[in-house]
Image (cartoon, rainbow, N blue to C red):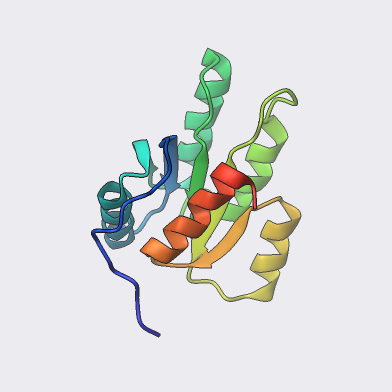
Length: 148
């Protein structure tokens, strides 16, 4: 399968996403995903957390301080300390009812049906294979912008 590494493609939407939260423990994947996001100029801010617990704590802090959630969360499933499924289950419990939850896109190497089924139950917007490409980045962004 040929990877889509067109580094010059830029997001052609009139507004940028305010913040993307990437929850990923693999430094190479972080580097590649960050490069795609930066080159496409799709977000004003990219926040990177290396495990689910740190990301969860970050979002709790946002709730407690009244700050906006990221518009998009890119989430790995297989991480130490708190994996992606544990993160999703915990995060879904703390989202205030009056707040629009962020779009959550799982980026993983897992092809297990049990993982796909579980994240679907937890309301994930999109389930994609790693690494982010310009094509999958457009898919993820359109989930945020259009909800489809």
